[in-house]
Every structure is written in structure tokens, then in C-alpha cells.
Length: 76
Image (cartoon, rainbow, N blue to C red; front, side):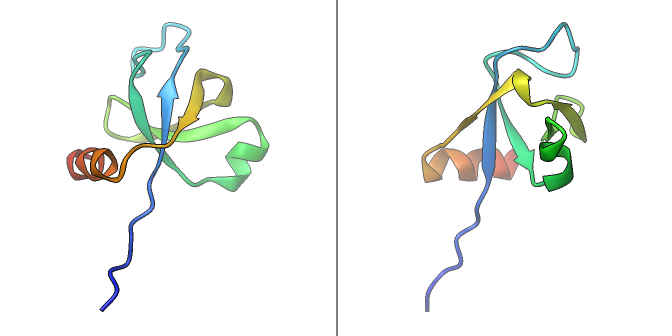
């Protein structure tokens, strides 16, 4: 039986303009939000544990090894 693989998307914070809920050089989970992305924003689960919209310029997308994705997903 084939196991369904979970797909998570992640971003690295490279800028936060002193936003208290984001830490630069930290990886965050990215939630799909096509409308926000068209408007130049990303929906990210931040330090508060909730998801909010932030300017896409604050982040770069990263591909993580499967084990790292699982570890991050288990925490969040």
C-alpha cells in the first residue's frame, strides 16, 4: 500500500521590519493562499502560532529534507 506524502511549504524570513512575530533567519510554515500571493503577500504561521499575512519580500522559499519537514510539522 502506497503512503500518501504530506506536502509542506516553508519560507525563510530574511526581513521583518521590526515585526515582533517574525524572527529573521528562521524557517516558517507557509499556508496556501492564492489571492494573498497575487497581492504580494504570504500567509505564514508566525511566532504567535497563528497564521497572518506578511509581505512576500520578507521571505524566500526553501525546500527542506523530508525529515526536517516532518519535525517542523509535528511542532506546529
